[in-house]
Length: 221
Ligand SMILES: [Mg+2]
Image (cartoon, rainbow, N blue to C red; front, side, top):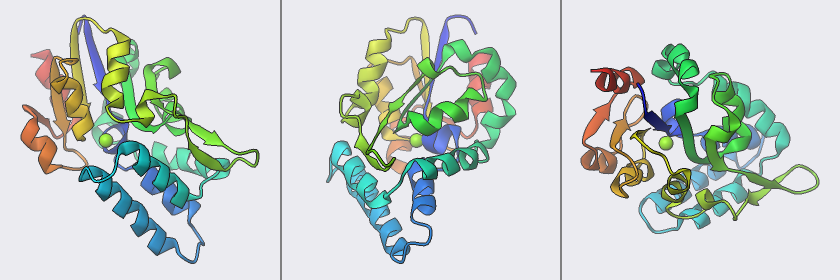
């Protein structure tokens, strides 16, 4: 496994869920309009996926509907730890052993990704993700707009900045994960289908992995 770097997505890849959807079920718990708001978040996500809304606007609008704060994030972290994708959980020892060669790159947020992957030995500086902005009462007001991941093509920009050498293997369920390979910044892209299968990504990908074992098997032979 010499000179190999793994770039791994977080939502629906390292964990089996979409973190912001899970956060919504926590922050909107007890809210009279919970169902309507959860649907609103899903609708905004769809607009973004159909290219009718920029990623920046989609994120802004979803955070506004979420009405989440620091205490909700505290509850989210243990829930995410119980939602690790089975094949990543199974390969915990491998990940710990190779954590220097693994990067988690996500348009999710460091506030919840860092503590989840720290259990696998992945250091904070190997987590490239957004960060929240809070008001003085601890309410989430938005995402730090200086971070490239808060904008369009964010994953491409941060991978470029890493200046990685050798073989670079990208694993993820989303089109933005595929775009890292498309931009010529990865040697291989595995579309990860253990949790979800997205038609547009499946069509673009050369390699399909229904588990992390399949990625590792392909790389060891
Ligand atoms: Mg994902």
